[in-house]
Length: 193
Image (cartoon, rainbow, N blue to C red; front, top):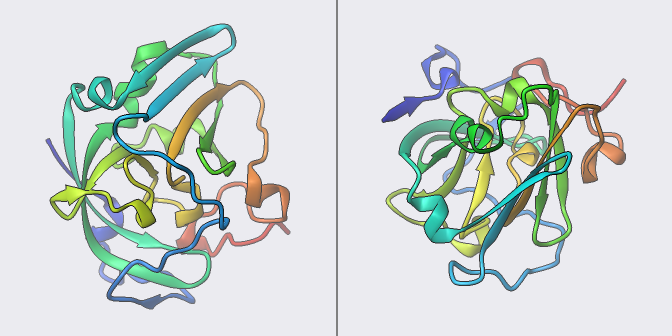
């Protein structure tokens, strides 16, 4: 199934205050986790329910193609990117955490980020494992990363290790440091007021 992000249907695809780049800039916390397809595990949890997927389990789920634009809070935007992965809704359905209102995503490097569940469940939100027809490069967060194109790119956790469905909001790494809890690029939600 091919998903085209709603942002790519806009007449002006660049949010306010953004400039277009040719390549995705590489930004991270400086910790480089030792992770690859062979030792990758993705934990899904909700209260006392838990399941763990390895790379083969993840890639055996129904695949989607995503065409989207990426917008970073540092003001760059990369237009027209192509990804393959699994719909976040498919992963959600593995646990069916029906009363969860938020998601906290964790990375192998110690990073975390939060979002309301409605953004996580958008049609164009995926757990990606392919970029531009190839494995996601390690420096772009491979082998597996979260992609939430309707929000600033810091919400799309690299080197994804865990997705926690939660009933009450908890802030992630940048949110604890003053970044906005939502992060909509077209509303310029960079910092909390």
